[in-house]
Image 1 (cartoon, rainbow, N blue to C red):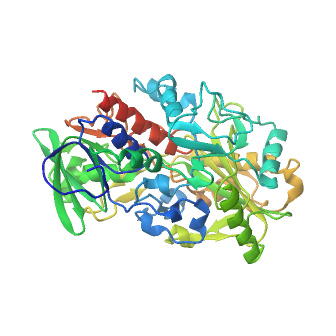
Image 2 (image 1 turned 60 degrees about the horizontal axis):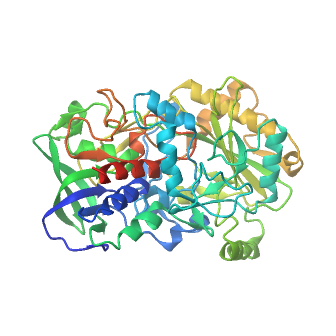
Image 3 (image 1 turned 90 degrees about the vertical axis):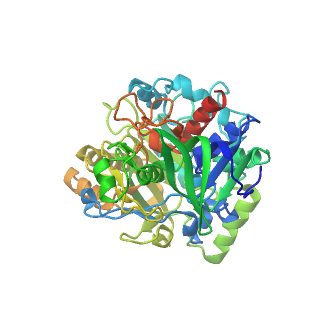
Length: 545
């Protein structure tokens, strides 16, 4: 063992981890730290690729073979829009294809989880876990507080060191508009604007699979099997005893004392339902024998609704307006210093309030010195992206704590079939109103110097879209995904929760979940860091049993 693709001999494992993503990689590695534990990791995707290590290459190569290719149902809350739900099908999971933004979330996020009855998930409980995961590399304008931020953990976190002039102009304009300049939004206070932070080293992506799982695979007691699609869980006498998976066209069954699901907010509820754990009526309709009637499996789907904006500027940006020589320059900058558009998708972040009445920031902005338009309709994400051919910038706005909820449903009893995704992204008008106010906030920032002097055109939304009704209509027509789905196997102390605060699946023995599906509420920002923390928390708890 201790290698990728070991033998297929029988026998019982101590632990099976389903999914080698951001959380699963951490869980598996921590469990393997106990020499007596035999740990098997099953990953449906392939080993990751060098193409995934540099974010900007996604603009030049179709990387769809590293994801699941999921599509939503038409969303009535957005005039019937359908979305490509990008989820990683590769070692590293979605952490191998995302924008690498490293955002812990606020202390208030986790104190809210605890106030919902999830003892042990307050800020004082989880912030030390983030610190232990982090290795803040030299790059920060203001050195991070070592009492809060980690310097010796496995995941390298860097701040954008050399910003494009438009990025610095955005930061200065936001400050001129009355928003504070945050020294570290992963530190004591998230409020304000700051340079972006990423899980990178010299510009290259570094996932929990890279930095935690792969070193663990040198041990003799852990094995990773790729291309292994888990099809179902075997339950007997109220306990999960085994999993079945398909690899290279052959069906296998493996037994374990304990099984941890780390498939994410879409695949984890789908696997539960395929295994007879879900709404009984729905399961019977698909011909699936009911093991446990749990109507809330797949419910409570949360996602940060996002608006993309674009502005034309009068200085060269990262938009490909300079031809071949510009692209060569971008590549040289990346290879020499790990900087530029190939390395970093969003050079600045902002966590702002759209109203002084908001107790915490209710929107997040991502600033990028290039802008792209995305075609609507059923188009692969990579083929739908068209970078504006003239100097431009983009600011994405998303609501930090949406009220709307969607659901994940079975479309078929076939494990190879995609589930039915019903986003209901703007089902609650309050989410629409917040995003409309967010556009107003952005326009107020864009009206401040020095950014104002660089902008020559408000490309999207057009300036004539101005009053509340027009902005809200624009939001409904334009809102898309931040690719942060969560909550479909909600953690809680109540009977409706799928897992308890120890992440054990209620009503079954030997089964845990560690991924974004357990989040009872979204955090304020990108969720990848929180997923790694969830994996660290469960991995430690099980390791010490």
